[in-house]
Length: 193
Length: 88
Image (cartoon, rainbow over all chains, first blue to last red; front, side):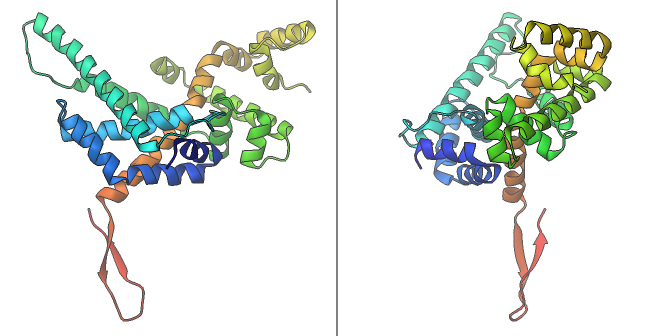
């Protein structure tokens, strides 16, 4: 699959996005290459799995909302492998920094993941997920498109609103809903900040 | 009646006329939720933007569950559809 075709699927609809994610997730060659790379660069199978999933998340986040991708004629899988490689290098660097701190303190020398940080990230993701689950699905779709740069005309077209004005009204209502929830739960706001 | 919430983006982006801006600011003085939205606008936008990440993580979780706990046929009865059992 070409990169621009994948970008198109990501930006067309939730259904086409879901189909693409499933296609990537079930690509044994890509998973195998990422596994091999992580395992031969100091990682364990669990790291490889995390990097594989994070690669997909990063790719979708990057591509969602992009307009001009017709010039991206390269192949999808090498691009994804590049993301995975960069993510793993960043992770190794982060662990290395922690390691040198540990060495300075003469406590431990082995290259360990930082369970505390992973836990914090997961905890934050869970908190976010629980907060965002308060929104109704049509609100989630409107806000997600709005915050990622889609115009109200595009939102109306993609999500089936009769006019740009209707989409704008819906966006205001949904943002007010999210604002109300944060207003009533200031502790969640503090945790996220 | 004006819903000043509809003006929020334009206010934050400096697109309101001077009079509208004044009206909006007066409204924020009386409406604490509107004021909260102005003060927390970047967070609201950031949270909304992260919905795509949340959606992707949910899709991956579903795929992971399918991969780890696939359904397998346990019995076939003639021409009737197979029965399935969740394997955990």
